Image 1 (cartoon, rainbow, N blue to C red):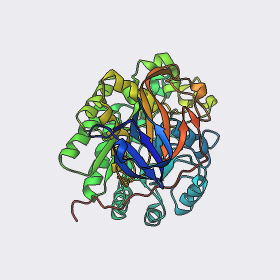
Image 2 (image 1 turned 120 degrees about the vertical axis):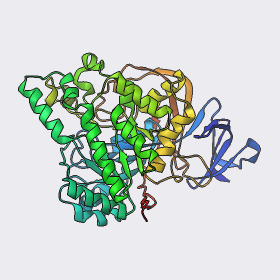
Image 3 (image 1 turned 135 degrees about the vertical axis):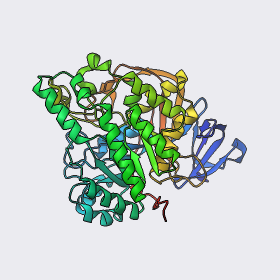
Image 4 (image 1 turned 30 degrees about the vertical axis):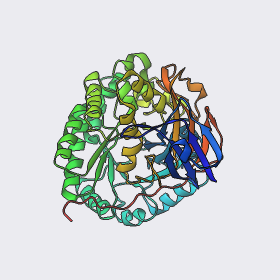
Length: 454
């Protein structure tokens, strides 16, 4: 007698779709096989007509805890994740205080403990003065480190080049990875000042203040530092054709580089500034179709490693300010991403197998938590999302679980909806309703150096 059997569904992996049952015991997948090979179980789910995907791994969320919990917190954000088929999240460090010290890391871990509905990892941040904290943080429960090379929420200044070099080296020595918000801040500040001086307050001014070459410059510098130190490097929310070309060149040189794109950059383009105004203000900004098409090409050719949400809640008042420079950057996404992207699967823009690779398997590989997470195989955590690819609906902001529901995707028609979310064998969401108390646990990466010169 085991805990759970899921039968009659179609199991989706990055390699194909299998008609097989799943047996789960003590949170782990213990059986994959036909009906006659499935043991007796305390609970059975008939997944007839449904596809069983590995639980989604979103490596880019801002749950705003601690210090900014009027926007979101671990409880509300993780409920939204569970409703959206996400079973593992990785939370960004630009909170109050920033996760720049061991003390701040411990405070954040305490905040998450017992309050998250999904499993979670925590990033530390690289600042101008926390070089000496890296080693201790690396052994205290960190997923990896992020550096903010351009202004965003919290405006954590980017370290100078010499400090960055030493930080990359220390992170690599600790067997972890650096990820970057990659925009050149000096360029951003110069262009923002020029536009302000010229009286520009319209939504499109945000795009003009953050041109594609600013991202190109920052990605190039980070790749040079990665190559020089041997430290693995990840580009968060890559948004430009030029930066993608830099990543492709680095991958062809077999450098330890990975890159993600956002659902928002794949589905929105600059025509939405006139339609939605400051609601779509995002860093990096929503760009024109040339860049959007380049990102899709990167997905089709396998140069993009994963798709994330950059779930970034704010209060309604912060998102609805008229002056672009006063409006908050970012919006929610952890709950809406799955139906939005399953719609693209139904349209033929991406195969279901490639989608699973980009939202489950690859992010787990990027942050070295595979095969514990991101796959359906014996011995892996029993994390699943059961989806109905034929079911249609409309995204309704007011029905979402985040504290504020401001989203540019309100009213979008979708085809493909989650029916169950299962975390380590526990049904945490069924038909849109959260079913369990918070069961989320901290996930830690397997250590590696990624250094080619060792």
